[in-house]
Image 1 (cartoon, rainbow, N blue to C red):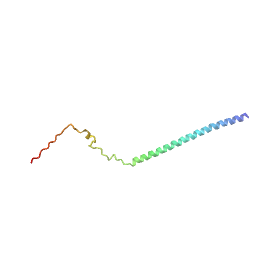
Image 2: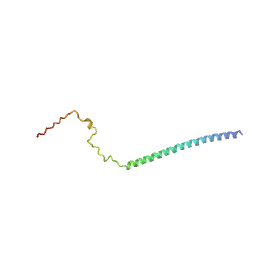
Image 3: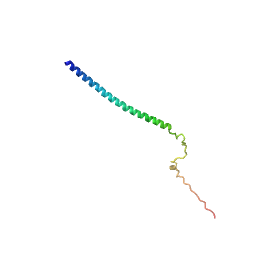
Image 4: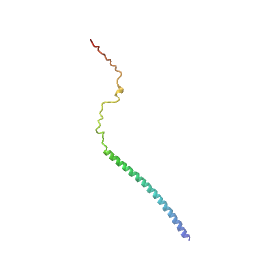
Length: 92
């Protein structure tokens, strides 16, 4: 009779260990699903960005940046040079 009781206890311990393993596997599968969804969203975003970059025209190739005008040139005018303007009187 004692042998049957020991067998029941051993079976109960084995069942507990198996249930813990199942719970761990459920957590792992949940984490794998979450990471798979995040990866799929990242792949779709990368593909959309690549298509956007391919379809969008590049205006920088047409841009001619050789301007002689500098917007800060007006700030550094030489005010030290005073030029006297003489007006010739008209003779009547």
